[in-house]
Picture 1 (cartoon, chains in turn blue, cyan, orange):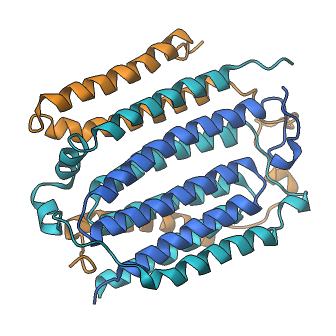
Picture 2 (cartoon, chains in turn purple, cyan, brown):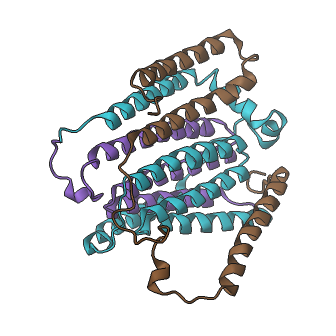
Picture 3 (cartoon, chains in turn orange, blue, green):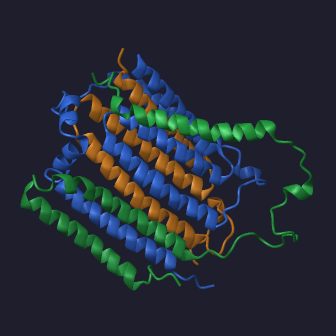
Length: 101
Length: 170
Length: 123
């Protein structure tokens, strides 16, 4: 018996929606950034599964570029976290209300 | 039969691990569960005949990005949210959005029609190895996104150095 | 075929992972089962060579750790772009070679910027 393609797509959808849930409900900035990485990984699972099932390699090329962009975005996002929280002790985004400093 | 067994293990483990990632109070625990999640996703890529993607997943994600997260969490002393109840209860709005997204897209999954099969069958990829097939496609047909990726990495490098080294007026 | 593919050449890797996990978990499990468990508050404090710990156990954040980890990630992504190119570059013509030289030159600009901003100076 074969694993149908829709199972892989449901798995990718589940990981993506868990990432959405984590991003919308947690207020800690690190967990929010990790939820973004979770969403990107869900999309990668979908791309590579489709590339395997329709026997085309372009899905894996796109997943490759998604990983490269995710690395760049994680680097910049964490630099923003460091710049913002250098003098504050809290990591809750609801308490960052002013734009100066 | 064996492939279904492996897929069920991977799917169950990936969903449980991602739920563990978003629900832990201590951010260090979240990062560690995410490490285990990335190894499972890399194993899933092996079952999809994408061994170079599995290697990239481990090298870049588990070995690079998670190390960045761990550095920031540990060195910035981001405390766990023990006592502030407002930040530990999960808002119902986020949950309904995520659940609605899941239900809406999964109901439209039955009308999905896959494209006609291309030429990169499993035997072709195994005959010339996966990394060679990927390389031949990446540097001839996708040369423009490749150069744009170099610019994105340049911007990330310069931006992160500027942001992290900036002295605040305190 | 796409639904029943099994990567049979990676079976030794799976056995290796299972044996390594068995060793690790087994050692921890035997410790948990056979240890005496009588904690009292002095035993549970962090170890500080005999004196009582005072003050926050964290040093001031040195930015150079983050800068080095970030540079590692960016150059790691550059390296994974170079791996497939290194395998096929003699089969895809001179144009792909020139494109890769342009890629490395663009990232060399970033490297020179990091050098000038003293990102590689340790002290």
